[in-house]
Length: 204
Image 1 (cartoon, rainbow, N blue to C red):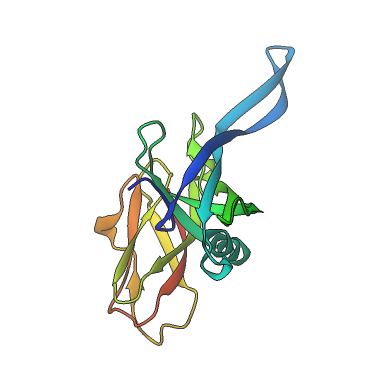
Image 2 (image 1 turned 30 degrees about the horizontal axis):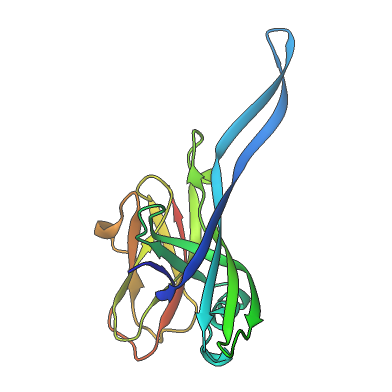
């Protein structure tokens, strides 16, 4: 299957990652002496992925597609089954799309770089930051549910789900039985002819 973003296959030429440590520091007076306290909550990961496409018109370009995703502030799922760096459907934001065009012997090559950031913190010794995970998820047309991955590290105690558009009285919920330390499900009472997007907040 290779590497996909929002279900779209990427021809990856280079993969980079960075992590930013989320922490707080404060002054303290301990046993009659000054002390500098540090608490590390975890990390947030950024992916920088170089990809390429050939003989693809701009309306059909993945660079164009992910520009739209970034402009709308939507989350998408990053997946890779590459042995050197497997990623199992991690929700990410698209922070930046940069591309160059090359016409080498009429080959019409477009090289583009995607900068992605994980939606949730990878918990460290302090647990998930404030124990909250939020984002958006979409139930595709004809379906009645979507699985939502999270990085809280434990099963959420409460999940608040809100549709982005009026569902005209149709029910929606996050089934209790679907909640686990890694994911939960958003469900609707019946399928729709168009995609239905939801915002969610999950708390420990």
